[in-house]
Structure formats: C-alpha cells, structure tokens
Image 1: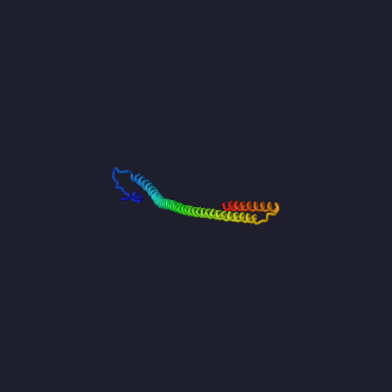
Image 2 (image 1 turned 90 degrees about the horizontal axis):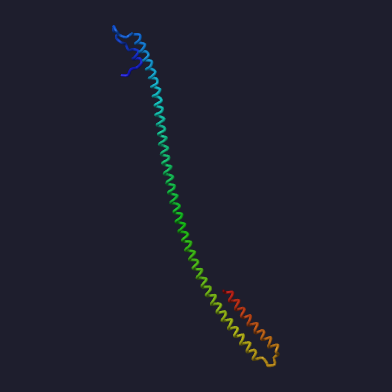
Length: 189
C-alpha cells in the first residue's frame, strides 16, 4: 500500500492516557507530509528527466547504428571499388600485353618479309649487273673487232695523224665503256 501526504495528514491515532502529545504528533505528521510532497515532486522531475535521457539514449543508439551501417556500407563500397579497379587494371595490362605481342609479331613478320624482298632485289641486281657486264663486254668486243676490221680495210697511205686520232678515239671509247660499267655497278650496289 502506497502512502500519500494526504494519508499522513488524515491519519488519526487513538488517545491513550499516557500517549504522545497530540499537537506534537500533528506537527510532525505535517512536516513528514510536506517532506513527502517535496520528494514526490523531485521524483516526478527525475522520472521526467530519466524519460528524456532514455529517449536521447535511444536516439543516440539509432544514430550509432546508422553510422555503423554507413561505415560498413562505405567499407564494402571501398572494397568493391578496389576489387573492380584491380580487375580492370589486370584486364588493361593483359590486353596491352596481347596487343604488344601482336604488334611485335606483326613487326617481325614485316621485317622478315622486307629482308626477303631485299635479298630478292639484291639477287636481281646482281643478275642484272652480270647480264649488263656481259652485254657491255660483248659490245666492247664487237667494237674492238669493228676497229680492227676498219684498220685492216684502211689504205696504207693513211697519215699518221689519222691513225693517232683513231687510236685515241678507240681508247676513249674503251675508257668510257669501262666507266659506264663501273658507274652502273656502283649504282646497283
């Protein structure tokens, strides 16, 4: 049973011959009732404050949980972004390696093709030079024979100047023929 200040004030005691002084008891009961009223008021205030604090604590707990969820979500997002970045960088590197291997293989193939073409052109050049030398030598032989035949057919009366002039022309033609051959050989090397 709960006692209220009103209960204390209304409490009556039986009078006995050797009992307490009624006025003193009433004053004391009034004092206790007032003290109890003060305690009840304080208790009500404290209970209100306690409810406010409980509400704030609950709010803080919700905020803490929200922050933890946010941090967890941010950590997961960061981890996922890092994993995706690592995968993407690996993919880029792999593609770059494949592409560089392809480019190198193509360059090697082109180099081999060009070397083959160069070898073929050198062979053709050598063949052409040999054929041209043969042709030039044959022409020189024909020219030499022609000069010799011309010399035989000439009259013995011919002057020395004419002979010297023809010898000089013959030497000049041979020299020009050799220089032409040499120039062609240098041209195709």
